[in-house]
Length: 244
Image (cartoon, rainbow, N blue to C red; front, side):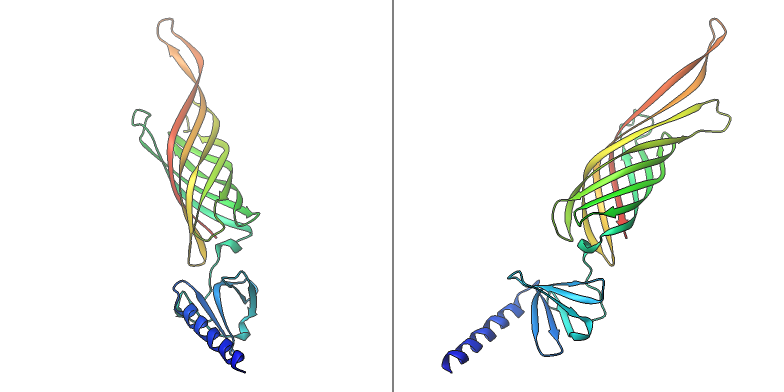
């Protein structure tokens, strides 16, 4: 009997110490049980909690009385958002600035892209995108972007790679025949949760080129001849975006 009372006393003391630790989530069940660890909201309306010992428990919403997040009380109808559970199809909106030398026509260009993405896992996301990009001319890009998260956490750095085709929008009656071009890029970024979607920033290198053909006039012999011009751009890309 004394051993049993000692065990109960020690368990109560350890439980009290755990309650006082900052950063832990506490789940209170209607049957009087308490679970402490990292709490996640599941898509089927239930909740999962992972203890510091690595044990995982799943409870339905009807079993839960209340819970606290990092020691702060939270209503049970509030979602505990977990970016690692964004799997399958998604939608991305991204805006970027392309910064370069002022000797290269303009020091700043801008882009606005949208992407349909697919997450193979919390770390690996691939997307097919388009939009509008201003790189000396207006272009419609068609590209593929791959992103790899370095850490299996909601807040994590990542690396990305992209490449695709540029469809140049030429000026009407300009006499130019725009052949379009290509664009590639790579860099790193940082993501974090915001409400019920993902927010991120990225910084990387972007190379773009486009080709145009037009007629040149030679004043010496009073003749016209076709010319092909290739425009190359090396830029620092700074972007921000959201994934739903």
